[in-house]
Length: 383
Image (cartoon, rainbow, N blue to C red; front, top):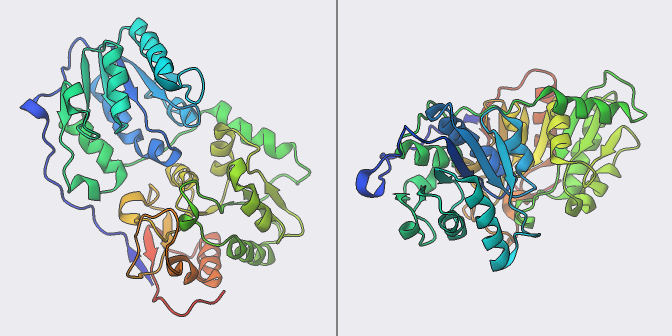
C-alpha cells in the first residue's frame, strides 16, 4: 500500500527581532553561508533562489565547505563559491581570522547565514559585514542584526521549508519550495565521458544505488540486502548496469553489493568528484538509497528514487520532488534520530528485500505510483 506523503505542517509566520526586514536597496554584494552536508546543501537551494529573486542584480557569493561547493556552484543563482577550507588553511582560531580577513576585503553589504552555528555569525562579524541575518540558534542572536526566532514548530517541518521560511521572514521572495537541480552541459558531459571510458556498451540502462550513509550505521539498511536487491534487478534486467555510489568510507559496503553481481556493475565509491556523481545520477533510470545526501541529489535531479528510512524522519528529510517512494516500517521507536541503534535495529531489519526489489521493478516497468510512502505492517523480519 502506498500512502501519500503527509501535507506540509502549518506553521505561524516567523518573527524577526524588532520586526525588521532586510533592505531591498543598496545590497550589491551578498554573502550566503551555506550548510556543511550534501543533503542539507541541496535542501537550501530554494532559499538561495529566493535570495536571488529578491536581489536579482546583486553579486551573490556562497561560503561553503569544499565537499558541498559543487552543489552551490552548479545553478544560476550563485555568482561565486568561496571555499571554507577547514580542514586546511581556515582551520582553528587563526584560520577563522584569516578567512574573516579575506571576506572583509570583498566588502560584503550583507550576510545571510543558512548554517545554524555560532561560528558563522562570528566570522561574519569579524569580517565587518554590516548586516547579518539568520536563525537565533546556538546563542548567536546578539551577533545578528536581523535574528529570526526559531520556533518549536519550524523545527518539525521539512528542511526545505525550514530554510525557506527563514528567508521569507527576512523579506525574501520565496515563491515556492519546489526543488530542481539543473546541471550545466559541461557537468552532464562528465557522465558521458566516464561511461564511455568503460568497456560497457552504449545505450544501456543505468540503475543507481547508494548503500552507505555518512551520519551513522543506524541510517544504513544492511549491505547484504542491497546486494540481494541488486542480484534480483540483474536477473530481471540483465541489460542494465548498476552504478554504485558513495564516499571512500562507503567502499566496504559497496564492495559487498558489487560482489553479488557477476558483471555489469561500476563501483564508483570514492572514485568520483561530486560533479561527476551528480552527472552520473542524472543518467539513472531509478536510484535506490538510504536517507543520505545522494538521495537528495537524486530527488532534486527528478530521478525516481526509492529511499529506505529507519532512524530518521521522512517528514523532515524526505527526498525532494514527487517521483519518490519512501520505504519504512511504522515501529514505535522510529524516528529516533540516533547514529547507532541501541536496541534491535528493527526499523531496518523489518524491511524485506522483496518489497524493495518489487518497488524498484515497478518503477522500471512504469507501473508504480510516485510521491508516497510504502509503509507495510511490521511483520517478522526475514530477508
